[in-house]
Length: 93
Image (cartoon, rainbow, N blue to C red; front, side, top):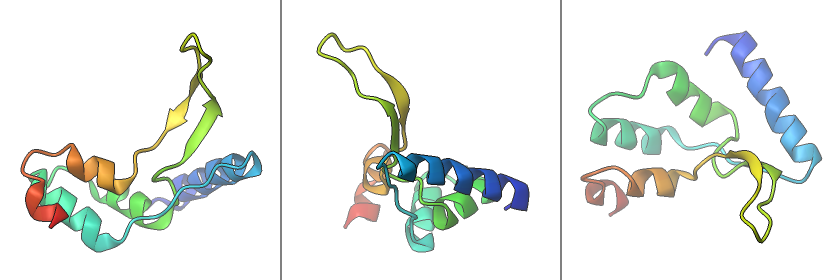
């Protein structure tokens, strides 16, 4: 991964941690399995980011109010990503 991109991603994770939000990295095997199920569409830079920067499950922003208003970013956990891919059953077993 581009060192500058990785540094900025780590800064983003640090800002999220400062307000109590934490994510996880993903093991390379899970990313490889997802990439296989997706027909090889995950670029190397994204594969690298998922395995080195704790983004999965990270939530940052303002929680929705009762009216449903809220702004923020939520990065899916790997399990949610795998569930959203057609043919995922081979990965989840």
